[in-house]
Length: 129
Image (cartoon, rainbow, N blue to C red; front, side, top):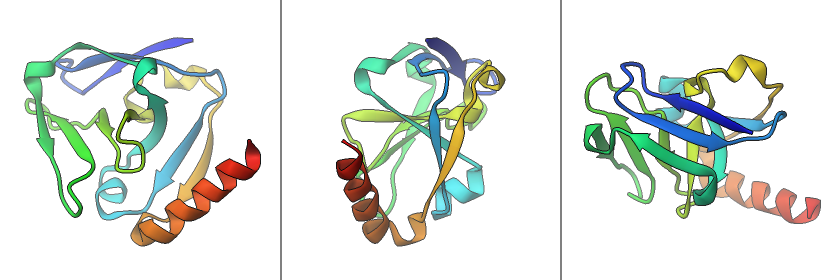
């Protein structure tokens, strides 16, 4: 199904293809924990920016691999390009217009120990496929 979303002021708008029972990830790294970000990982094909390209500003830190896109008007990060999936996107589940209609489950990611945790996540994904 297609869900719309965006930043607080409405300058940035997007659509994302999501299942009715998505799995979102809660990360405890320095930026995600402070922002309350809930990650909905999607491929580039599942994401479409509808408006606001000119309202985005990008922040990087640490390795510089992740591209954190913020609305320069209201400051909300409704999506970004994650270090773990540089060809896809992570959408903030909380920025979907009608997230309440989805039955999501949440998994935890220890972003304070990113290298070890990403290896564990990749192993689990390989085992599941």
